Length: 181
Length: 131
Image 1 (tube, helix red, strand yellow):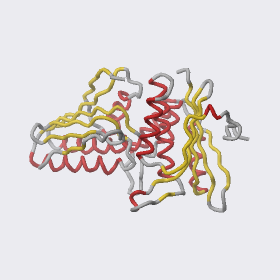
Image 2: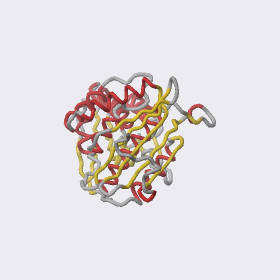
Image 3: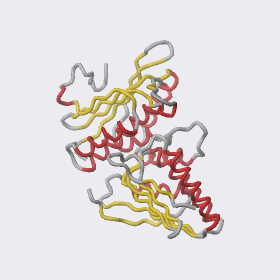
Image 4: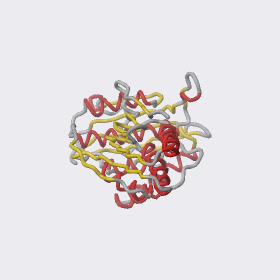
């Protein structure tokens, strides 16, 4: 059973603020991001937190999704996934899901499990430690997106994986931003 | 040698506005930075600085980013490391880190972390947020 019990089938449609499935390129990030910042209720601080968590979740999909839409040249390759943002009475809930290789999904799940045990001070120290490392050739981002999400959301990261086939799973991350900060 | 210039595009906030001026020995990176390929952008800035310092001896850079993603933060650290290297070779390099008041995105704190991680001193300058 899902921790949040937030299947689109049993949620009040009025609570869905954003529901997007597709490639996560920068134009989409800007569109959804501007909606979150400009047409969103809540204080600037909360809006910025939601925006920041959204961007990192979306870029996580773009970098690590096993599903790609490729139009035009290869440099236009962006990962495909789904982001849903719910407006619940006490918090905004953000869920991001995508197809991932089993092993990668397991690594991410283990990472989230570790992050959930850490205090904000420990998270910040870990972020610095990882960001300080020399950049590898294959590195796409900062490798600190999940830590940043945990710091910004100030909530645990809930992972769910469902087998898709032998090699792949559908992998989702859910977190929340409280309305009373 | 030419100025390094990236103008903001209407409605697209993922690339910061950048203007590095050869004549004045001054420059500014401002706005938002959440590009997919952040390394490409900041590496090209590093390249510009390397070339600039072959014939010049000082530069003052202001960074006034209102939002940046974690990829950009990683790329910015490498840019600061490059600048620190140039500074240690005897050039005069000043980097101003502008942070807003109120600072909802903890820009100041990020800047402090950058000092540790890049090993470069930054001049912290507060400004009044428009938001």
